[in-house]
Length: 77
Image (cartoon, rainbow, N blue to C red; front, side):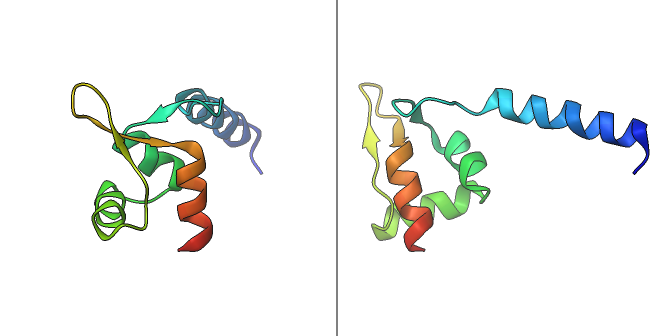
């Protein structure tokens, strides 16, 4: 592999890793959840509506997901 390409891929990987939360108590929003599961936001929405993905609403009525819930969904889909 070309050295410049490998370096660029390493840089991109570091950028992506920096955008995802690393701790288990983080509450994901729909966009973060879709990035974490590598699916579209529509897929997250459909899973929530049909009941296969747990969610909670915060004080501002924003939908949030726990990492464990996303992992359970990924394992059972």
